[in-house]
Image 1 (spheres, rainbow, N blue to C red):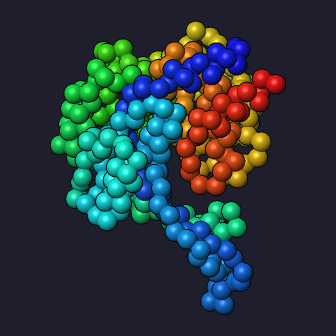
Image 2: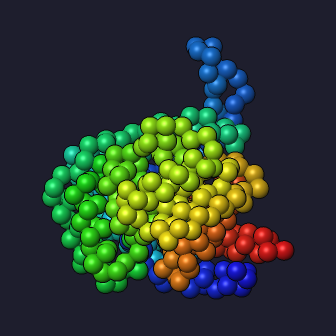
Image 3: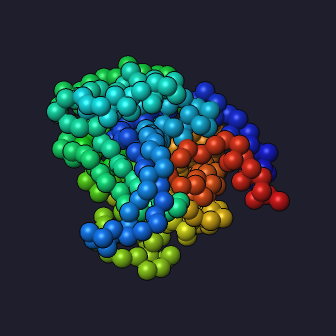
Length: 328
């Protein structure tokens, strides 16, 4: 497709409204340098330079959507704690709509603490509770979505196995999306892997596929075979298998199979790349792109963010530059 058509799709992303339902997280970073090893244990000592907070999980997906000019609408849960206040403050500072965020005093806000030294990821510390949300919060999330369904162009289910996406909730959300003819895309994890049926786009990575099927994948032929089996099991319209440095493979219900090589020039950090792929592909589809066109655009977006340290959103200008460079 001519580059002008891809750029037109990006322009048409403006104003599209995407609901993101899933696990909200606060990404906390400690940045520093290593100059010595601890005398107490064979571990590096980090001399801290600065600490920063960022949007993680479903919040990072929303951040990517906003960066592309679309309108994110987050539905999820935070704890009644200082981390929840910090996450909500970050969202409100960036003018996100937080009316779909529910506070649950029985669980902590999920926090991922990453220590970065010399631009290298040293360690990650997670503070979270993986118990499923209660039925009242389930009902509240579904009710908020129903109240806004007519203004929404697409829905993303962002599952990190932290308890927000339940079997009952995902079934009701997908049924609502199908009823109202809305695009629904899924970034899955193992708990409900085979329950996301009848969706527009299902986007697992290679590790998730191997865990779900209980086998290692050693060839492209085997990957395609499993992808087709998954397509059949889920009655999905499209399966997008992401494979890190090997790119991604799109398998479609009408029989199309497309391998898309990675566009990453160098990989500094893969944190958040999956968030960028699901966000970019969904927004592109709501803007009129075919699923293949959306996957190609998302592949470029992932290539750009992998060159940055930490989970960062795709910048629209950087994405346009990547697409234009590929056409030269």
